Amino acid sequence: MSAVPTPAPTPTPAPAPPPAQPQGSHGLSIDMLERMLEQQPNDPNVWSALGALLRQAGKPEAAIACQRRALEIDQRHVGAWTNLGNVLGDVERYDEAIAAQEHAVVLSGGNANLLSNLVVALRHGCRFGRALEILDVALRARPNDPQLLWDRALTLLQVGRYAEGFRDYDSRLSLPVYQNRIAEGPMWDGGPLDGKTILLTTEQGFGDVLLTARYVPMVKARGGRVLLECHPELQRLLSGLEGIDGFVRAGTAYPAYDVHCPLMSLPHRLGTTIETVPPPTRLTVPAEAREKAARLVPGNDGTIKVGIIWSGRVTFKDNARRATTLNRFLRFLDVPKVRLYSIQKGPPEAELETLGTSTLITPLGPHFNDFADTAAVLERLDLVIMTDSSVAHLAGSLGRPVWNLLQFMPYWVYGDKGETTPWYPSMRLFRQTTPGDWDSVFAAAEQALRQVVALRS
Image 1 (cartoon, rainbow, N blue to C red):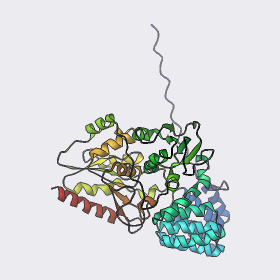
Image 2 (tube, rainbow, N blue to C red):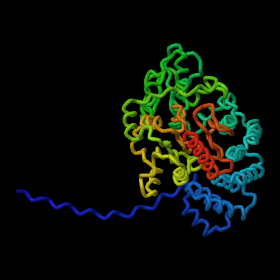
Image 3 (tube, rainbow, N blue to C red):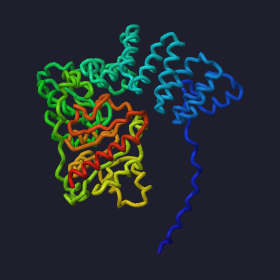
Image 4 (spheres, rainbow, N blue to C red):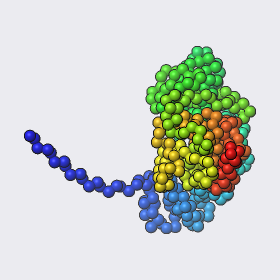
């Protein structure tokens, strides 16, 4: 009988290395800049560069302090003023951010890049008219500047000037961040396809695919063969979409095609105005997804079943503004007959563990393999209350009641005022009226939820 080998001892793991520090455009790190400040404590360039890296590292308060130090040394330091404006905008101190950016523009003599920073601050501060005035001035000097055209597109769309905004929307394709997302060959101009194959490419988030799926039948009506680039998480849901001749898995090589068009360029190609937004498209919810949902969410049991989401994808650059925390939703547990179901996915799901029990909020996220599973659950819920993410587009596309709790300046689809959006008739909007003020938003949603309960009693 052979001897049983003794397992080798498990080595003690080495300590984890410290997290990598962000580096600036000149290869400088926070440590390097700190060492430079030991030798040059009164150099505003070093202070401002350190502040820029701290902002990149997610340390806005320290970043603000560094920019203030730079300006104590040199009140006319243009870079420190615009860097200060950028980080003040990150923490939603928009009045101060705008003032800082205006100071930078004046000191620079009207530098176009700094005008763009000012426009961003104005737009996030919901000063859309002033932003458009600045853009008119800047574009007279640089009429083909893609960043300025992109800023104008977003501003025009925010105030509902869709024909003009979508006209400028293709300017994004000239920005460096988009260069690796553009298919080769001729781009479709919106005209007749006459039997040609068109490839519709995905470029942004899942929500934007759901938003623009309504245009696919209109593309098909132009008389071509339609291929849709699609992430696997959406394919079951879109499998029955009218007008699709085939799918191309996102990230794989493209098949042969004659023309292409990014999905978010379709509203312009198809002449969308705020009065002519097409209705959401029909989505496919497979029978097996509905069977799973029936096991997860009970039928009519006398309660009002409310799904909740408090965060979108954490890697999205604007998620910190649009997301909040689970604890704000706990106030809905005080409303009689309401039962909460978490349809949150991703790292924020871990917040459920802080409750100490899974009996108060039913966690459904772990059961979702794709958006079809989520859609089947939405069909069984009475209402979804959430901060903005792709599931808002899903619920709106399904025609399910959804209350979207919005940041001060939300995605342009939701406009700049009002409780409704032409893109999703079943959606009700609750807006921040003061930057970062979620308290009043949740108070309004709770009051509305109590009214729903009262009407059903």
